[in-house]
Image (tube, rainbow, N blue to C red):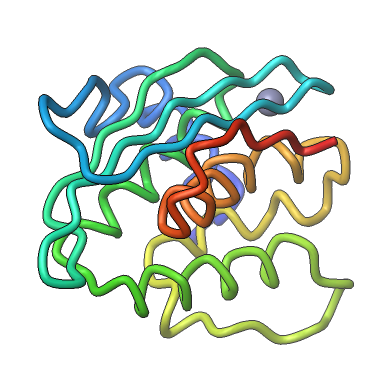
Length: 150
Ligand code: ZN
């Protein structure tokens, strides 16, 4: 029997141990910092945007397993995508995580990110999971300001 909870744990732990695209870009076009004071998660996100496409992305920072794995999975999903697609992912991800039980979300668009949907059952972790995404939103808008979940 396929156990979603086990798969979720496994993927989160894997991304936490070996975060993808962890580091810094030499010449980012957009960047933003995010902070979740409730948990102490911090993220610095950098994008290289060319012709409306996220051609490279990197993040670094410190945080819990959920915040790190969410950021890691987000960067994997973003590379090569248009800014419009990135914003659609942000909206879809936020909706999935903050939805009330039973409310539908766009699982086709989210793809592998759907594995994090279980976080919606743990209100205390929602800000951990969405921090990277709010930071992405800010970086795309080129805010260059620190995003706080509070
Ligand atoms: Zn956290």
